[in-house]
Image (cartoon, rainbow, N blue to C red; front, side, top):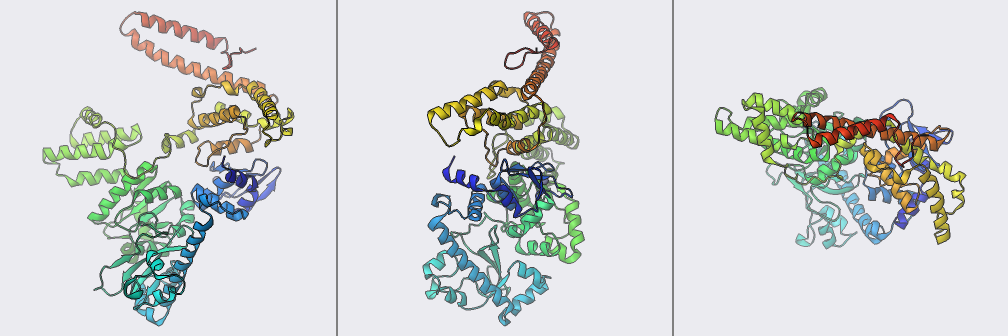
Length: 621
Ligand SMILES: [Zn+2]
């Protein structure tokens, strides 16, 4: 592992890191507190200083200090590394974003901060009256616009003049803080200013709305700079992220005003995508904060297309998309101003599932009375909706409905669907690993008892290792003798449990299989216990098993029992499969393949009866 990461992990005290966010109370070896990742009244969130990990028995979140920071701050792994380094007072190496690069960025942030403060002052000054009147007309109160740090850009070049004392003009121009025209002039004039913040609430760009209706364009935005790129951030996300975690959903709207208005009415989990449609980067960003998104875009042709495109980007990220029903209102802001919070609540409660929205939109675009157009509608529904549905059950549900509504036979539709082949790759969305998120969630819900028990026995080995004297061997001593004796002790203890020979494919659950693979890898590399990247779906399970006490008299006997029962389960699965194959073969009368299958079946039955041998070849005593 990376030296710096290694050092960071060693020096981080999980109790100290967590205590910055959660009130912890000691119970025996561990600490407990109320989980920051789900709502609870009795603490199921546990921190183990011994293993330097945390685990929540309520929502199954778990991992090390870096994982905790990633989750609680909703930041990426590199951001979490930087934050932890900052907390520990370790200077971040240049390649991880430290050193000069960081200092330069901090200077840029300071300039943006100064500009934001200037605009804020102007909004409260006499010059800002027109802007304040506009905000009042739009129903926004002072606490709200102060929270969003709205501002006013006056006529003239006052900001450029003020900032020229801090940085040379070309640099200010590059940062989008001034124009080089006329020896330095302001970019925003007589405009209401919406600062765009990064995740930590630092201003990184501005949007400006013209205050007199003749000025064009109506909205003027900062261009791309070293701090900001359009389409990569979401407006108000720094304010919405906490509430989004609590409510387990984000509301996505189109414009600044929609977002601010929603926040003022209590929908503090609202963000704006700024622009006519969501980008792949924004979809990915959303997936870091929530698994459920309510889309509340404008109800016009552009808004509907933006909704369809957003669905296209969000669904491959494993996000459940719900489309708000804002009957009769053009956007969330006008709905909120006319009808208030309750009406917007209703618009969210009466949502259309994303899939339903797509179905209806495609169906409405064609005239079903004309045979040719109907055929086109059907093919579009098959290609754009049904072919992309992840579950067979959902596919069938929509096929049945399409059959009823089109009058085409279900078989014909299935043929058409198969003719379409594999669904086209989705644009923009990044996939995480080979296993789909849906599969993972199913795997989490249905962790098999036996597989988990066996992994628990394996992970609780440190107790046994300590008894066999492994702890006295220093981990950082890499001399061949020490290494081989460490390996030797590890091998004897874990081999005894049958770890190296446990066949991965016999583990049915993907999460358990991944954890077993990590254990085997750590065993073969002699670097026990296994470590995990924060994205590894097995990390929470490993954390749980390391924390959960294990009460068994004889760990080896228990492991053998588990293996034996796993093997019996495997035989039962094989018998089940054989039975199906035999019943198919029987239909065409006696044959050699049938005879072989029957023979296999009998052999397996006998094996099952007398107690199957364990995976390492030993028979039950
Ligand atoms: Zn929890």
